[in-house]
Length: 110
Length: 114
Image 1 (cartoon, each protein chain N blue to C red):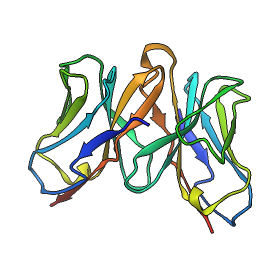
Image 2 (spheres, chains in turn blue, green; image 1 turned 90 degrees about the horizontal axis):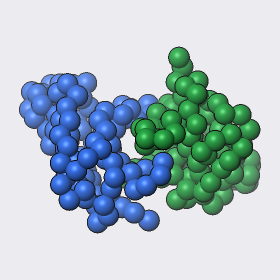
Image 3 (tube, chains in turn purple, brown; image 1 turned 135 degrees about the vertical axis):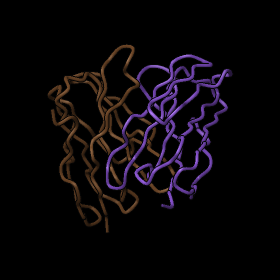
Image 4 (tube, one colour; image 1 turned 45 degrees about the vertical axis):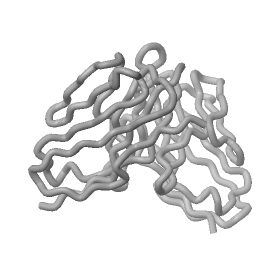
C-alpha cells in the first residue's frame, strides 16, 4: 500500500525550543493533515492543508503543504510540556480515505 | 456533544473467541471508519462505511467484519480472535463531500488476544 515516511521517529527537546518534523511520500496527495495523539487518547486533528504551497498556522503550530504535493512539514514554536505526544501526518489520496505516517514521538524536558 | 465514543475501552480475549466493538457518533457524520494502531506502524484502515447500510474494505480487512445498520453506529466484529489482532482499535467519523478527510477519532479500545 501507500507509505508515508515520517521523521524523526522521536525527539527529546528542551521546553522553549522550536520543533520541526516532516512527512514525505513517493505519491502525490490532494490533502495533508496533521494529528496529535495524547497518551491513552485518540488522534486529534491539528491542521488540514488543501493546496500545494499552502502555509497554515494554528496557535504555535505551523504546517506547510509541499509544492510537489509529496511532502509536508509541521513546526511547533516555543514548545511547552503539554506538547508531548505522538504527531501523525496523514495524506488523502482520493475519496475519503487517509494514509497515515508512523508518527513522531515528542518528549519535552521541562 | 459526546463526539465519537467507543465501547469497551479494554478487553482481553482468548484465541478463538469472538467479540464486537461498538462505535457511536452524535455529529450526524455520513462516513465512519475502523483503524488499528500498532507500535511503529501508525494507523491502518480496516473497514469503512460511506453511509447507513454500506461498508467497504480498507487496507487490512482480513479477520474482521463490520456493520452499519444505523447512521450513528458502526460495529467491528472479530469472529475468531487471533494473537495478531492484539492492537488498539480506533473508530473515526467524518462528513461527506469536501471535508470527508477531516476525521474525528474516538478514544480507542485496547484489545489483547492471548
